[in-house]
Image 1: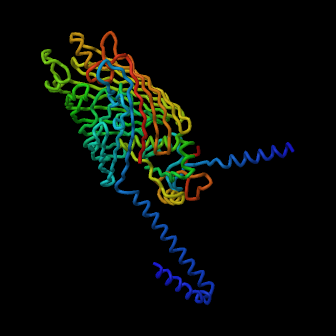
Image 2 (image 1 turned 120 degrees about the horizontal axis):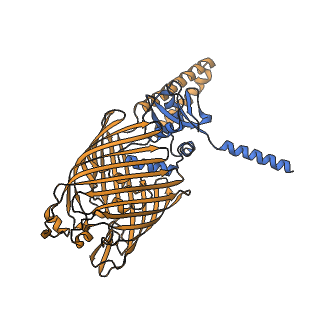
Image 3 (image 1 turned 90 degrees about the horizontal axis):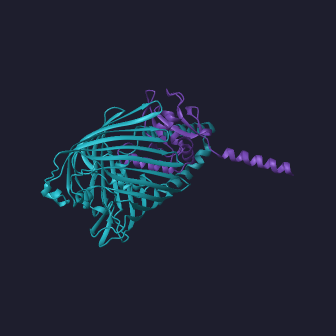
Length: 410
Length: 138
Protein backbone atom coordinates (compact mmCIF):
# COMPACT_ATOMS: atom_id res chain seq x y z
CA UNK A 1 0.00 0.00 0.00
CA UNK A 2 2.74 2.37 1.06
CA UNK A 3 4.75 1.38 -2.00
CA UNK A 4 1.82 2.07 -4.31
CA UNK A 5 1.37 5.46 -2.72
CA UNK A 6 4.99 6.42 -3.23
CA UNK A 7 4.83 5.30 -6.86
CA UNK A 8 1.79 7.51 -7.42
CA UNK A 9 3.45 10.42 -5.62
CA UNK A 10 6.62 9.92 -7.63
CA UNK A 11 4.68 9.81 -10.85
CA UNK A 12 2.78 12.97 -10.06
CA UNK A 13 6.00 14.77 -9.12
CA UNK A 14 7.57 13.66 -12.37
CA UNK A 15 4.46 14.79 -14.21
CA UNK A 16 4.66 18.19 -12.52
CA UNK A 17 7.14 19.78 -14.88
CA UNK A 18 5.31 18.29 -17.86
CA UNK A 19 2.09 20.01 -16.76
CA UNK A 20 3.99 23.24 -16.54
CA UNK A 21 5.10 22.86 -20.15
CA UNK A 22 1.73 21.89 -21.65
CA UNK A 23 -0.29 24.74 -23.17
CA UNK A 24 -3.21 25.95 -21.06
CA UNK A 25 -5.88 25.03 -23.61
CA UNK A 26 -4.73 21.42 -23.51
CA UNK A 27 -4.95 21.35 -19.71
CA UNK A 28 -8.48 22.71 -19.92
CA UNK A 29 -9.35 20.10 -22.52
CA UNK A 30 -8.08 17.35 -20.21
CA UNK A 31 -9.97 18.72 -17.27
CA UNK A 32 -13.15 18.78 -19.32
CA UNK A 33 -12.55 15.15 -20.32
CA UNK A 34 -12.10 14.16 -16.70
CA UNK A 35 -15.26 15.98 -15.67
CA UNK A 36 -17.19 14.26 -18.44
CA UNK A 37 -15.84 10.87 -17.35
CA UNK A 38 -16.76 11.60 -13.73
CA UNK A 39 -20.29 12.60 -14.68
CA UNK A 40 -20.64 9.37 -16.69
CA UNK A 41 -19.49 7.32 -13.70
CA UNK A 42 -21.98 9.05 -11.42
CA UNK A 43 -24.73 8.52 -13.94
CA UNK A 44 -23.93 4.79 -14.06
CA UNK A 45 -23.97 4.58 -10.29
CA UNK A 46 -27.42 6.16 -10.10
CA UNK A 47 -28.66 4.04 -13.00
CA UNK A 48 -27.67 1.02 -10.93
CA UNK A 49 -29.46 2.46 -7.93
CA UNK A 50 -32.65 2.88 -10.01
CA UNK A 51 -32.48 -0.63 -11.43
CA UNK A 52 -31.55 -2.48 -8.25
CA UNK A 53 -33.97 -1.41 -5.58
CA UNK A 54 -32.29 -2.72 -2.46
CA UNK A 55 -31.28 -6.20 -1.45
CA UNK A 56 -32.94 -9.38 -2.57
CA UNK A 57 -33.31 -10.57 1.03
CA UNK A 58 -34.55 -8.23 3.73
CA UNK A 59 -34.04 -9.11 7.40
CA UNK A 60 -36.09 -7.57 10.20
CA UNK A 61 -36.39 -8.57 13.81
CA UNK A 62 -38.09 -7.77 17.09
CA UNK A 63 -37.39 -8.44 20.71
CA UNK A 64 -39.25 -7.88 23.96
CA UNK A 65 -37.62 -8.40 27.33
CA UNK A 66 -40.26 -8.37 30.01
CA UNK A 67 -40.84 -9.09 33.66
CA UNK A 68 -44.08 -9.46 35.57
CA UNK A 69 -45.51 -10.21 38.97
CA UNK A 70 -49.02 -10.97 40.24
CA UNK A 71 -50.43 -9.85 43.61
CA UNK A 72 -53.14 -12.37 44.34
CA UNK A 73 -54.38 -13.90 47.58
CA UNK A 74 -55.31 -17.57 47.51
CA UNK A 75 -56.80 -19.91 50.11
CA UNK A 76 -54.10 -22.48 49.32
CA UNK A 77 -51.41 -23.02 46.67
CA UNK A 78 -50.49 -20.24 44.28
CA UNK A 79 -52.10 -18.46 41.34
CA UNK A 80 -50.71 -17.56 37.93
CA UNK A 81 -52.17 -15.12 35.41
CA UNK A 82 -52.72 -16.43 31.89
CA UNK A 83 -49.70 -14.50 30.56
CA UNK A 84 -47.43 -16.21 33.09
CA UNK A 85 -47.27 -13.63 35.90
CA UNK A 86 -47.11 -15.23 39.35
CA UNK A 87 -46.24 -14.28 42.92
CA UNK A 88 -42.54 -13.90 42.26
CA UNK A 89 -41.01 -11.59 39.65
CA UNK A 90 -40.70 -13.75 36.54
CA UNK A 91 -38.42 -12.69 33.72
CA UNK A 92 -39.29 -15.14 31.02
CA UNK A 93 -43.08 -15.07 30.69
CA UNK A 94 -43.14 -11.90 28.57
CA UNK A 95 -39.71 -12.30 26.97
CA UNK A 96 -39.72 -13.20 23.28
CA UNK A 97 -37.93 -12.53 20.01
CA UNK A 98 -38.42 -13.07 16.32
CA UNK A 99 -36.50 -12.66 13.12
CA UNK A 100 -38.05 -12.39 9.68
CA UNK A 101 -36.57 -12.95 6.26
CA UNK A 102 -38.33 -11.57 3.18
CA UNK A 103 -36.78 -12.98 0.02
CA UNK A 104 -38.02 -11.64 -3.29
CA UNK A 105 -38.09 -14.38 -5.91
CA UNK A 106 -39.06 -12.12 -8.80
CA UNK A 107 -41.09 -8.95 -9.40
CA UNK A 108 -44.25 -10.58 -8.09
CA UNK A 109 -43.31 -13.44 -5.77
CA UNK A 110 -41.82 -13.26 -2.32
CA UNK A 111 -41.03 -15.93 0.30
CA UNK A 112 -41.37 -14.88 3.94
CA UNK A 113 -40.15 -16.84 6.96
CA UNK A 114 -40.43 -15.67 10.57
CA UNK A 115 -38.68 -17.59 13.33
CA UNK A 116 -40.06 -16.97 16.80
CA UNK A 117 -39.10 -18.05 20.31
CA UNK A 118 -40.65 -17.09 23.65
CA UNK A 119 -39.99 -17.63 27.31
CA UNK A 120 -43.57 -18.85 27.69
CA UNK A 121 -42.58 -21.71 25.36
CA UNK A 122 -39.11 -22.43 26.87
CA UNK A 123 -37.53 -20.53 23.95
CA UNK A 124 -38.13 -23.37 21.52
CA UNK A 125 -37.80 -21.69 18.14
CA UNK A 126 -40.75 -22.24 15.85
CA UNK A 127 -41.85 -21.07 12.43
CA UNK A 128 -44.56 -18.58 13.15
CA UNK A 129 -44.96 -17.33 9.60
CA UNK A 130 -43.74 -19.20 6.51
CA UNK A 131 -45.53 -18.34 3.32
CA UNK A 132 -45.26 -17.56 -0.33
CA UNK A 133 -46.73 -14.23 -1.35
CA UNK A 134 -47.76 -13.75 -4.95
CA UNK A 135 -48.76 -10.33 -6.22
CA UNK A 136 -51.50 -11.09 -8.72
CA UNK A 137 -52.07 -7.45 -9.65
CA UNK A 138 -51.11 -4.16 -8.01
CA UNK A 139 -54.15 -4.55 -5.79
CA UNK A 140 -54.53 -8.28 -5.21
CA UNK A 141 -52.07 -10.61 -3.49
CA UNK A 142 -52.27 -14.25 -2.43
CA UNK A 143 -50.43 -15.79 0.52
CA UNK A 144 -50.13 -19.54 1.02
CA UNK A 145 -48.45 -21.33 3.91
CA UNK A 146 -48.28 -20.82 7.65
CA UNK A 147 -49.73 -17.51 8.79
CA UNK A 148 -50.97 -15.99 12.04
CA UNK A 149 -54.77 -15.91 12.22
CA UNK A 150 -56.19 -12.38 11.75
CA UNK A 151 -59.09 -12.69 14.22
CA UNK A 152 -58.84 -9.31 15.97
CA UNK A 153 -57.30 -5.91 15.24
CA UNK A 154 -53.83 -6.55 16.70
CA UNK A 155 -53.80 -10.39 16.50
CA UNK A 156 -51.23 -10.71 13.74
CA UNK A 157 -48.50 -8.73 15.55
CA UNK A 158 -49.33 -9.74 19.12
CA UNK A 159 -45.69 -10.78 19.72
CA UNK A 160 -44.18 -7.53 18.41
CA UNK A 161 -44.35 -5.44 21.57
CA UNK A 162 -42.89 -2.40 19.80
CA UNK A 163 -45.92 -2.31 17.48
CA UNK A 164 -48.44 -1.33 20.20
CA UNK A 165 -48.45 0.78 23.39
CA UNK A 166 -49.58 -1.88 25.91
CA UNK A 167 -47.07 -4.24 27.57
CA UNK A 168 -49.62 -7.02 27.09
CA UNK A 169 -52.70 -6.73 24.86
CA UNK A 170 -55.97 -6.99 26.88
CA UNK A 171 -56.33 -10.71 27.71
CA UNK A 172 -60.13 -10.38 27.78
CA UNK A 173 -60.03 -10.15 23.97
CA UNK A 174 -56.64 -11.51 22.95
CA UNK A 175 -56.36 -14.60 25.17
CA UNK A 176 -59.91 -15.75 24.55
CA UNK A 177 -59.22 -17.95 21.54
CA UNK A 178 -55.94 -19.81 21.79
CA UNK A 179 -55.64 -20.18 18.00
CA UNK A 180 -52.55 -18.37 16.80
CA UNK A 181 -51.03 -19.85 13.68
CA UNK A 182 -52.79 -21.72 10.92
CA UNK A 183 -51.95 -23.35 7.63
CA UNK A 184 -53.96 -21.39 5.13
CA UNK A 185 -54.41 -19.56 1.86
CA UNK A 186 -55.19 -15.85 2.15
CA UNK A 187 -56.19 -13.45 -0.59
CA UNK A 188 -56.19 -9.73 0.03
CA UNK A 189 -57.43 -6.87 -2.05
CA UNK A 190 -56.53 -3.23 -1.60
CA UNK A 191 -58.82 -0.56 -2.96
CA UNK A 192 -59.79 3.04 -2.31
CA UNK A 193 -63.08 4.87 -2.23
CA UNK A 194 -62.29 8.58 -2.37
CA UNK A 195 -60.03 9.46 0.56
CA UNK A 196 -60.67 6.11 2.32
CA UNK A 197 -58.37 3.18 1.59
CA UNK A 198 -59.41 -0.38 2.34
CA UNK A 199 -57.92 -3.82 2.67
CA UNK A 200 -60.30 -6.75 2.30
CA UNK A 201 -58.93 -10.19 2.99
CA UNK A 202 -60.31 -13.69 3.10
CA UNK A 203 -58.63 -16.90 4.21
CA UNK A 204 -59.25 -20.63 4.37
CA UNK A 205 -57.19 -23.20 6.27
CA UNK A 206 -56.91 -25.33 9.38
CA UNK A 207 -55.19 -25.35 12.75
CA UNK A 208 -54.64 -27.48 15.84
CA UNK A 209 -54.51 -25.49 19.05
CA UNK A 210 -53.54 -26.10 22.58
CA UNK A 211 -56.24 -24.69 24.86
CA UNK A 212 -53.70 -23.90 27.55
CA UNK A 213 -53.21 -24.95 31.15
CA UNK A 214 -56.62 -23.85 32.32
CA UNK A 215 -58.23 -26.64 30.27
CA UNK A 216 -55.41 -29.14 30.94
CA UNK A 217 -53.90 -28.46 27.51
CA UNK A 218 -56.86 -29.92 25.64
CA UNK A 219 -56.23 -29.97 21.87
CA UNK A 220 -58.81 -28.10 19.79
CA UNK A 221 -58.77 -29.16 16.14
CA UNK A 222 -60.12 -26.39 13.91
CA UNK A 223 -60.99 -27.46 10.36
CA UNK A 224 -62.36 -25.38 7.52
CA UNK A 225 -61.10 -22.34 9.37
CA UNK A 226 -62.15 -19.44 7.18
CA UNK A 227 -62.79 -15.79 7.57
CA UNK A 228 -63.25 -12.41 6.02
CA UNK A 229 -62.00 -9.09 7.33
CA UNK A 230 -62.15 -5.52 6.14
CA UNK A 231 -59.87 -2.77 7.41
CA UNK A 232 -60.51 0.80 6.31
CA UNK A 233 -58.21 3.76 6.82
CA UNK A 234 -59.31 7.36 6.69
CA UNK A 235 -56.85 9.98 7.85
CA UNK A 236 -56.16 9.13 11.51
CA UNK A 237 -58.99 6.61 11.80
CA UNK A 238 -58.87 2.85 11.30
CA UNK A 239 -61.98 0.69 11.37
CA UNK A 240 -61.86 -3.08 11.24
CA UNK A 241 -64.59 -5.68 11.00
CA UNK A 242 -63.82 -9.39 11.01
CA UNK A 243 -65.68 -12.66 11.03
CA UNK A 244 -64.03 -16.09 11.16
CA UNK A 245 -65.58 -19.49 11.57
CA UNK A 246 -64.34 -23.07 11.97
CA UNK A 247 -65.51 -26.58 12.58
CA UNK A 248 -63.94 -27.42 15.96
CA UNK A 249 -63.41 -30.84 17.51
CA UNK A 250 -61.98 -31.94 20.86
CA UNK A 251 -61.35 -35.59 21.70
CA UNK A 252 -63.35 -37.17 24.55
CA UNK A 253 -60.12 -37.84 26.50
CA UNK A 254 -59.10 -34.18 26.31
CA UNK A 255 -62.59 -33.07 27.29
CA UNK A 256 -62.48 -35.28 30.37
CA UNK A 257 -59.04 -33.87 31.18
CA UNK A 258 -60.42 -30.33 30.93
CA UNK A 259 -62.96 -31.19 33.65
CA UNK A 260 -65.99 -32.30 31.63
CA UNK A 261 -67.16 -35.55 33.32
CA UNK A 262 -67.74 -38.26 30.69
CA UNK A 263 -70.97 -39.28 32.50
CA UNK A 264 -72.61 -36.13 31.18
CA UNK A 265 -72.23 -37.53 27.68
CA UNK A 266 -71.19 -34.14 26.27
CA UNK A 267 -69.27 -34.46 23.02
CA UNK A 268 -67.34 -31.83 21.09
CA UNK A 269 -67.32 -32.98 17.52
CA UNK A 270 -67.26 -30.66 14.48
CA UNK A 271 -68.91 -27.81 16.37
CA UNK A 272 -69.35 -24.64 14.35
CA UNK A 273 -67.48 -21.92 16.21
CA UNK A 274 -67.12 -18.29 15.19
CA UNK A 275 -65.04 -15.27 16.15
CA UNK A 276 -66.49 -11.86 15.36
CA UNK A 277 -64.72 -8.62 16.04
CA UNK A 278 -65.24 -4.93 15.49
CA UNK A 279 -62.42 -2.48 16.09
CA UNK A 280 -61.95 1.27 15.96
CA UNK A 281 -58.68 3.13 16.32
CA UNK A 282 -57.68 6.79 16.23
CA UNK A 283 -54.09 8.01 16.25
CA UNK A 284 -53.27 11.58 15.26
CA UNK A 285 -49.79 11.54 16.75
CA UNK A 286 -51.09 13.44 19.77
CA UNK A 287 -53.94 11.23 21.05
CA UNK A 288 -54.31 7.48 20.81
CA UNK A 289 -57.66 5.74 21.09
CA UNK A 290 -58.43 2.09 20.49
CA UNK A 291 -61.59 0.09 21.17
CA UNK A 292 -62.68 -3.40 20.22
CA UNK A 293 -65.68 -5.59 20.71
CA UNK A 294 -65.33 -9.33 20.21
CA UNK A 295 -67.45 -12.44 20.40
CA UNK A 296 -66.37 -16.07 20.54
CA UNK A 297 -69.33 -18.33 19.98
CA UNK A 298 -69.39 -22.14 20.24
CA UNK A 299 -72.44 -23.61 18.58
CA UNK A 300 -72.99 -26.09 21.42
CA UNK A 301 -73.05 -26.29 25.24
CA UNK A 302 -69.53 -24.85 25.65
CA UNK A 303 -69.87 -21.34 27.17
CA UNK A 304 -69.55 -18.51 24.61
CA UNK A 305 -67.99 -15.17 25.52
CA UNK A 306 -68.42 -11.53 24.73
CA UNK A 307 -65.58 -9.16 25.36
CA UNK A 308 -64.19 -5.73 24.64
CA UNK A 309 -61.85 -2.99 25.70
CA UNK A 310 -61.35 0.76 25.42
CA UNK A 311 -57.93 2.44 25.61
CA UNK A 312 -57.05 6.10 25.69
CA UNK A 313 -53.49 7.38 25.57
CA UNK A 314 -51.80 10.75 25.17
CA UNK A 315 -48.44 11.34 23.45
CA UNK A 316 -46.35 13.75 25.52
CA UNK A 317 -43.01 14.02 23.76
CA UNK A 318 -41.20 10.77 24.45
CA UNK A 319 -43.79 9.74 27.07
CA UNK A 320 -47.19 8.21 26.63
CA UNK A 321 -49.48 7.58 29.60
CA UNK A 322 -52.54 5.47 28.87
CA UNK A 323 -55.49 3.82 30.51
CA UNK A 324 -57.47 0.73 29.46
CA UNK A 325 -60.74 -0.77 30.60
CA UNK A 326 -61.56 -4.30 29.50
CA UNK A 327 -64.27 -6.86 30.08
CA UNK A 328 -65.21 -10.43 29.21
CA UNK A 329 -68.41 -12.14 30.24
CA UNK A 330 -70.20 -15.36 29.32
CA UNK A 331 -73.18 -15.22 27.03
CA UNK A 332 -75.91 -17.79 26.32
CA UNK A 333 -74.96 -20.06 29.23
CA UNK A 334 -76.50 -23.51 29.02
CA UNK A 335 -78.28 -23.62 32.38
CA UNK A 336 -79.12 -27.30 32.11
CA UNK A 337 -75.43 -28.01 32.72
CA UNK A 338 -74.07 -28.49 36.25
CA UNK A 339 -73.05 -25.10 37.66
CA UNK A 340 -69.60 -26.45 38.43
CA UNK A 341 -68.98 -27.03 34.71
CA UNK A 342 -70.05 -23.55 33.68
CA UNK A 343 -67.88 -22.16 36.48
CA UNK A 344 -64.89 -24.07 35.16
CA UNK A 345 -65.27 -23.18 31.48
CA UNK A 346 -66.95 -19.76 31.32
CA UNK A 347 -64.84 -16.59 31.15
CA UNK A 348 -65.62 -13.62 33.33
CA UNK A 349 -63.34 -10.73 34.28
CA UNK A 350 -63.07 -6.96 34.19
CA UNK A 351 -59.92 -4.88 34.43
CA UNK A 352 -58.45 -1.42 34.68
CA UNK A 353 -54.90 -0.96 33.39
CA UNK A 354 -52.74 2.12 33.77
CA UNK A 355 -49.62 2.18 31.61
CA UNK A 356 -46.71 4.37 30.63
CA UNK A 357 -44.55 4.10 27.51
CA UNK A 358 -41.23 5.85 27.05
CA UNK A 359 -39.28 6.09 23.75
CA UNK A 360 -35.65 5.52 24.59
CA UNK A 361 -34.63 5.82 20.92
CA UNK A 362 -36.72 5.63 17.77
CA UNK A 363 -36.35 1.82 17.87
CA UNK A 364 -36.52 1.03 21.61
CA UNK A 365 -39.50 1.54 23.90
CA UNK A 366 -39.67 1.02 27.66
CA UNK A 367 -43.12 0.22 29.02
CA UNK A 368 -44.70 -0.41 32.37
CA UNK A 369 -48.28 -1.14 33.39
CA UNK A 370 -50.36 -2.09 36.40
CA UNK A 371 -53.56 -4.06 35.85
CA UNK A 372 -56.29 -4.41 38.42
CA UNK A 373 -58.56 -7.39 37.67
CA UNK A 374 -61.95 -7.69 39.31
CA UNK A 375 -65.51 -8.98 39.09
CA UNK A 376 -64.69 -12.63 38.34
CA UNK A 377 -68.02 -13.80 39.69
CA UNK A 378 -71.66 -12.89 39.32
CA UNK A 379 -75.04 -14.49 39.96
CA UNK A 380 -74.48 -16.65 36.86
CA UNK A 381 -70.98 -17.99 37.32
CA UNK A 382 -68.20 -18.13 39.88
CA UNK A 383 -64.81 -18.00 38.14
CA UNK A 384 -61.27 -16.93 38.94
CA UNK A 385 -60.96 -14.77 35.82
CA UNK A 386 -57.87 -15.50 33.77
CA UNK A 387 -56.04 -16.74 36.88
CA UNK A 388 -55.07 -20.38 37.25
CA UNK A 389 -54.83 -21.76 40.79
CA UNK A 390 -53.01 -24.92 41.70
CA UNK A 391 -54.94 -26.34 44.62
CA UNK A 392 -56.74 -23.44 46.23
CA UNK A 393 -59.11 -20.69 45.26
CA UNK A 394 -58.80 -16.91 44.99
CA UNK A 395 -59.52 -15.32 48.34
CA UNK A 396 -60.88 -12.10 46.84
CA UNK A 397 -62.83 -11.16 43.76
CA UNK A 398 -59.85 -9.08 42.57
CA UNK A 399 -56.10 -9.26 41.91
CA UNK A 400 -53.28 -7.11 40.52
CA UNK A 401 -50.54 -7.74 37.94
CA UNK A 402 -47.50 -5.51 37.30
CA UNK A 403 -45.58 -5.76 34.01
CA UNK A 404 -42.44 -4.07 32.72
CA UNK A 405 -40.87 -4.49 29.30
CA UNK A 406 -38.26 -3.20 26.89
CA UNK A 407 -39.38 -3.60 23.29
CA UNK A 408 -37.32 -3.07 20.21
CA UNK A 409 -37.27 -3.65 16.47
CA UNK A 410 -34.28 -3.93 14.23
CA UNK B 1 -33.76 52.04 22.81
CA UNK B 2 -37.23 50.43 22.84
CA UNK B 3 -37.35 50.59 19.07
CA UNK B 4 -34.04 48.88 18.82
CA UNK B 5 -35.17 46.01 21.06
CA UNK B 6 -38.34 45.60 19.02
CA UNK B 7 -36.35 45.63 15.82
CA UNK B 8 -33.98 42.96 17.06
CA UNK B 9 -36.97 40.92 18.25
CA UNK B 10 -38.48 41.15 14.77
CA UNK B 11 -35.18 40.15 13.21
CA UNK B 12 -34.93 37.22 15.59
CA UNK B 13 -38.48 36.13 14.74
CA UNK B 14 -37.67 36.39 11.05
CA UNK B 15 -34.64 34.21 11.63
CA UNK B 16 -36.73 31.68 13.52
CA UNK B 17 -39.40 31.35 10.86
CA UNK B 18 -36.68 30.87 8.28
CA UNK B 19 -35.19 28.06 10.37
CA UNK B 20 -38.43 26.02 10.16
CA UNK B 21 -38.01 23.92 7.03
CA UNK B 22 -40.77 23.63 4.50
CA UNK B 23 -40.75 20.15 2.97
CA UNK B 24 -42.45 19.74 -0.40
CA UNK B 25 -43.41 16.57 -2.27
CA UNK B 26 -41.72 16.21 -5.66
CA UNK B 27 -41.88 14.02 -8.75
CA UNK B 28 -39.95 14.08 -12.01
CA UNK B 29 -40.71 17.12 -14.22
CA UNK B 30 -41.99 14.76 -16.94
CA UNK B 31 -44.28 12.79 -14.60
CA UNK B 32 -47.93 12.55 -15.59
CA UNK B 33 -48.98 13.48 -12.04
CA UNK B 34 -50.51 16.86 -11.38
CA UNK B 35 -51.11 18.07 -7.84
CA UNK B 36 -51.58 15.52 -5.04
CA UNK B 37 -53.95 15.93 -2.11
CA UNK B 38 -52.78 15.50 1.47
CA UNK B 39 -54.77 12.23 1.68
CA UNK B 40 -52.96 10.91 -1.40
CA UNK B 41 -49.54 11.86 -0.02
CA UNK B 42 -50.39 10.13 3.28
CA UNK B 43 -51.63 7.01 1.48
CA UNK B 44 -48.50 6.87 -0.73
CA UNK B 45 -46.10 7.17 2.23
CA UNK B 46 -48.15 4.73 4.36
CA UNK B 47 -47.91 2.18 1.54
CA UNK B 48 -51.71 2.07 1.19
CA UNK B 49 -51.79 2.96 -2.51
CA UNK B 50 -49.40 2.11 -5.32
CA UNK B 51 -51.09 4.09 -8.10
CA UNK B 52 -52.48 7.59 -8.35
CA UNK B 53 -54.97 8.13 -11.20
CA UNK B 54 -53.50 5.14 -13.02
CA UNK B 55 -49.85 6.18 -12.68
CA UNK B 56 -47.61 3.90 -10.59
CA UNK B 57 -46.01 5.61 -7.59
CA UNK B 58 -42.97 4.49 -5.57
CA UNK B 59 -42.20 6.58 -2.47
CA UNK B 60 -38.64 7.35 -1.39
CA UNK B 61 -37.46 8.30 2.10
CA UNK B 62 -34.56 10.55 3.04
CA UNK B 63 -32.08 9.02 5.53
CA UNK B 64 -33.46 8.91 9.08
CA UNK B 65 -30.86 11.43 10.31
CA UNK B 66 -32.10 14.04 7.79
CA UNK B 67 -34.14 16.84 9.42
CA UNK B 68 -36.30 17.22 6.31
CA UNK B 69 -37.59 13.67 6.91
CA UNK B 70 -38.75 14.43 10.45
CA UNK B 71 -40.34 17.70 9.24
CA UNK B 72 -42.13 15.94 6.39
CA UNK B 73 -43.67 13.21 8.57
CA UNK B 74 -44.59 15.66 11.32
CA UNK B 75 -46.18 18.20 9.00
CA UNK B 76 -47.89 15.93 6.48
CA UNK B 77 -48.70 12.73 8.39
CA UNK B 78 -48.64 14.22 11.90
CA UNK B 79 -46.38 11.39 13.12
CA UNK B 80 -43.01 11.26 14.86
CA UNK B 81 -40.17 8.94 13.82
CA UNK B 82 -41.13 6.48 16.62
CA UNK B 83 -44.77 6.49 15.58
CA UNK B 84 -43.85 5.71 11.97
CA UNK B 85 -41.47 2.97 13.11
CA UNK B 86 -44.25 1.41 15.16
CA UNK B 87 -46.60 1.64 12.14
CA UNK B 88 -44.06 -0.10 9.90
CA UNK B 89 -43.41 -2.79 12.53
CA UNK B 90 -47.14 -3.63 12.27
CA UNK B 91 -46.90 -3.80 8.47
CA UNK B 92 -43.56 -5.67 8.13
CA UNK B 93 -44.26 -8.44 10.64
CA UNK B 94 -47.70 -9.18 9.19
CA UNK B 95 -46.53 -9.19 5.57
CA UNK B 96 -48.64 -6.15 4.67
CA UNK B 97 -45.84 -3.96 3.37
CA UNK B 98 -42.35 -2.54 3.61
CA UNK B 99 -41.40 1.05 4.36
CA UNK B 100 -40.35 3.30 1.46
CA UNK B 101 -36.89 2.70 0.09
CA UNK B 102 -34.39 4.88 1.92
CA UNK B 103 -31.95 6.87 -0.24
CA UNK B 104 -28.42 7.56 0.99
CA UNK B 105 -28.55 11.35 0.65
CA UNK B 106 -30.55 14.29 -0.60
CA UNK B 107 -28.36 14.14 -3.71
CA UNK B 108 -29.50 10.59 -4.46
CA UNK B 109 -33.11 11.69 -3.89
CA UNK B 110 -32.62 14.45 -6.51
CA UNK B 111 -31.06 12.04 -8.99
CA UNK B 112 -33.61 9.24 -8.54
CA UNK B 113 -36.74 11.39 -8.61
CA UNK B 114 -35.36 13.41 -11.53
CA UNK B 115 -34.55 10.32 -13.56
CA UNK B 116 -37.61 8.09 -13.10
CA UNK B 117 -41.17 9.31 -13.24
CA UNK B 118 -42.54 6.62 -10.88
CA UNK B 119 -40.64 7.95 -7.87
CA UNK B 120 -42.23 10.32 -5.35
CA UNK B 121 -39.95 12.04 -2.89
CA UNK B 122 -39.79 15.04 -0.60
CA UNK B 123 -37.23 17.76 -0.06
CA UNK B 124 -36.83 21.08 1.57
CA UNK B 125 -38.54 23.61 -0.75
CA UNK B 126 -35.25 25.48 -1.26
CA UNK B 127 -33.63 22.38 -2.83
CA UNK B 128 -36.04 21.83 -5.72
CA UNK B 129 -34.21 21.63 -9.07
CA UNK B 130 -35.61 22.33 -12.59
CA UNK B 131 -35.99 18.62 -13.43
CA UNK B 132 -38.41 18.19 -10.52
CA UNK B 133 -42.06 19.14 -10.17
CA UNK B 134 -43.65 20.08 -6.84
CA UNK B 135 -46.94 18.17 -6.43
CA UNK B 136 -47.77 18.97 -2.81
CA UNK B 137 -46.99 21.74 -0.33
CA UNK B 138 -48.15 21.26 3.29
